[in-house]
Length: 58
Image (cartoon, rainbow, N blue to C red; front, side, top):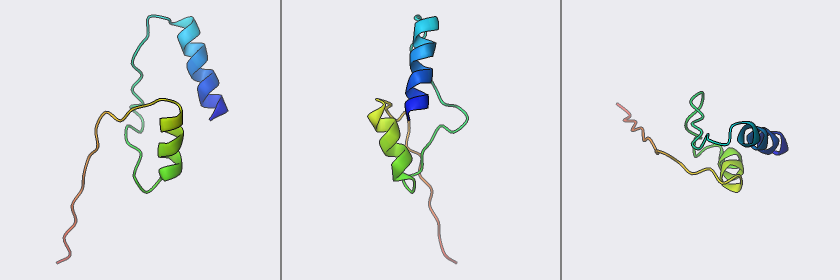
């Protein structure tokens, strides 16, 4: 998490006009990875969307 925070600080220092950051490579953290969700929340990130999937046993 410290590396991510340092990277964000560097980006903000070098590009002050930059506001939103969209992590397009992995836009969603699955609920099955609560440790990643907690890191994002601790860094102040907010979810843009929460996709859902349905599964039917046939």
